[in-house]
Image (tube, rainbow, N blue to C red; front, top):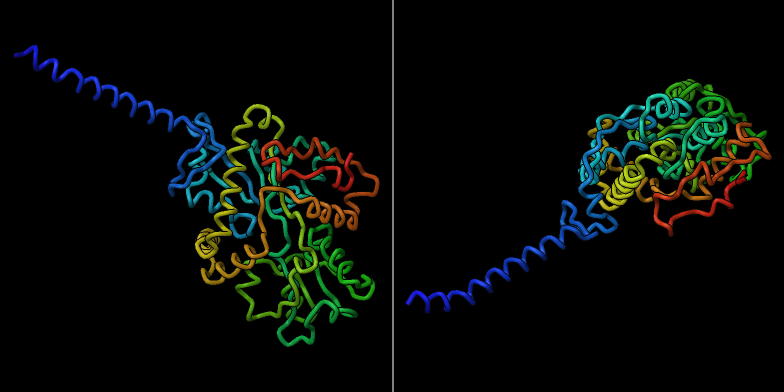
Length: 365
């Protein structure tokens, strides 16, 4: 009797064991493939099983005008939405950069792995011997800045400013460089109006209100927050649609010793930018939280910048050349200066189809 029962049970047990092994094998092969699941269930391609199992790396970074400048938003989204953690990166802190060479020095002297810095500062620092490498793009337009005037002023566009005074922030600033390019695009002789340094954004508004100047620069999010207080004449992006305001830099040592971290970091930035474009209202709420500003104004500003494709992990040749042209006006990039772009710009960490031809960049060596 026992023997008969064994014969009846044996085929069934073997089938069960084979089925169990088959299921386990399928489970293991699924977790080992390059297609892994993100937190919202979508498949994320391009990630190997080794990358998804990377040990959590805790880092600090520096970002120009964090957290109130819109350079900050992709990083704030990356933290808030868990994109950094998905790539095994923990942002322990973001050190605000005051702009220009200060942010570059934070990376070089503070031993920070990444910095979101002004393109002009990165180029100048490199030419001065600083060991840095541009690994990705960041802000590629100048749409977060505009020229404003008084509500009762008789000016409605840039042509109306001929014969009057307008202000940039400080000598050698990006706003001074942009002012030259704007006039060139508008077909206005710089001698037809007076350009002066206001000493800063707040100082420019004070001069404007007192009648010392007729127009000055204002940045987002204050541009939107104070839209009822001043008249917006034009956004700088209306005349400079492509302007590589900032780039992401790293050290040659990091690229050599931990290239996977660079790849994962840029992947987070790219994912964050795409999320901003697809979730503009939510992105506006996130920025409002970090910058501690009015939520409605923040949503409006983010939507405007998203519409104009303000952020991108890739680098646009026209956008970089606009910066270099501005630097020529300032005398910080002299005619004939050679830039070894293949050394300064490392495009190994961005998709092949998004890489630019460095021979099209000004000063290419």
